[in-house]
Length: 105
Image (cartoon, rainbow, N blue to C red; front, side):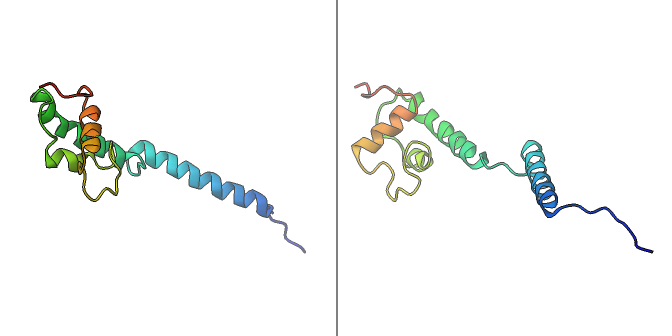
């Protein structure tokens, strides 16, 4: 007597496995367990908080070292060794904070 079982083609098993992996990833994103955008959001929050000091002073003066560090990965290159090292980078930070192109005198 020959037993008969359910036979699934290999293609169907592969598709089912991929669907399960995608479903787990979607659930993880919505539950906050895994969020590929969390790092960018945190960088932006840190930058916005550091901008408050510059904005509260009327956008006068150079950006502080803390603000320049927080600007890495937001308005400056993430691998910048010396953030705000030149006038162009300082201007990028000011504009990123919402200051006018030329600081008031």
